Image (cartoon, rainbow, N blue to C red; front, side, top):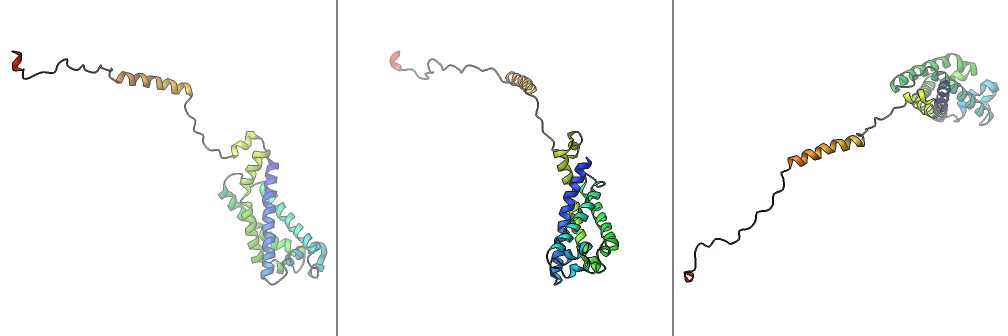
Amino acid sequence: MRLCRLMAGLDVGVAGGMAVLLWFAIHSRMSGEFWWSKLNVAGALFYGANVYSMGLGKATLAGTSLLLVVYAAASAAFSQFAPATGYARNALLAVLYATALHLAANRFFWPRLDPFAPSFFAVPVTLAGNLLYALSLTRFPGRFRALAATFGDSSWSGALLVRRPQIVGPPEGAAEARSAPEDAAGAAARPESQPPPEPPADPPQPFRNLDDR
């Protein structure tokens, strides 16, 4: 069960992290920067201040990998206490968790990358990205149930799946037994067949021929 939770958490976490990275690239282009600017700044943990003079390349790959690992790890932690059923509860918990992650990143993570990193990852920018991340976390119950049905134990994973009620008809013997009294009752209710009336032998003659006298 824990393995299925972890797999589902990594699934939604990587998808949410890719959505955040896409938003960072779009916002960089909207701000008149290179689309990889924020990704290079995220790579400052490995290359220091050199990332500001580096183009698309190693710094971009390092920053992208770091952010994906961070968001995937955060989602793996979320999967250990997220509810397996109930999309409304999971959506509320995902928003609260993404908000806490946003505040913690602004306080500890972005300044740790580089002194100028918080100016690239401003609060409105990261808030919009973390909302996209929370939207991806809402997919956790569905992904967990799908993985539980595939890899989990059927004794407990079957209880998580929503099954449609099956309409079961009456057994064949009961249908035949019920139809037999109905046929007998119908035969008893029908009147017995009567033979058709016989036509008269000679039709009545109201006037006789006078020559017969």
